[in-house]
Length: 363
Image (tube, rainbow, N blue to C red; front, side, top):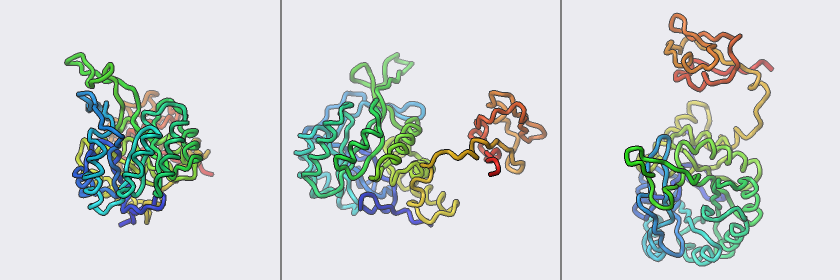
């Protein structure tokens, strides 16, 4: 077994799989279930100075993810301070307390949650392009507490790298990237209505569909700042965590998968990550961090897809998918016509048996 423990901003987590702020950590009991399900640490649902009143309905599953009009916690801050955080602390796991949104709200909340928090996470989901409020919120939190302060960034048209750099310059101890993306629209064809309530039925996208955007943002940010990053967006399996860590994250957060598969998903993802590390000869999860941050080598671009005979079963999936008609199946074996092949790489990713590999050119 590999060592899954990671250290992020001086906090030691038993594994790098944490819940993200959202319904799976809606109260203390829910956070206990996440701990029992194998999470390496806890992040509480975002609170503000008043309870949220989200529209209904506010969550819908769609292909490859979810849309939601979720807001911050529907519980008042007093209930969190009197009951919910104490329950979470009983798990013994590090607790990151999520707060929102304005500098004044952060300044009021931060010292009150400090007795329970190993770190703070500041949500910027409802802060616009102007970095001023984010910077002021960071400074308010840093002035009020002596624990690490993370800033969660949203991909809402803002230049993510610049926002991360501004957060680091303001004193943030880490970045959480990314939040859900939107506004988006999903329609129920049976009712001809949006799945979600609220303004025009618009909501925010999360889940696997978000992962490519999240990976790009995590890697771009990791290349630009020195503070650690927690990667969020579409982490559903161990291989997703591998990709996030390779992109430069030190840990990951999970929300949509926990909603769809229950709190046991944290342990399942950690187990899959452990198995992948063992299979590929890594001793620790921390070794993966940043392995995919380098620029693409020239040898990769000069490579080509090659069929391995043993695993190929002639399923025809690659041939059907090839837009250039460069692949045929002969005697249950895929054959690539190098004259027609444009080296687009689709067949490599479509093969379910690993029978087609990208072979780099000799150095």
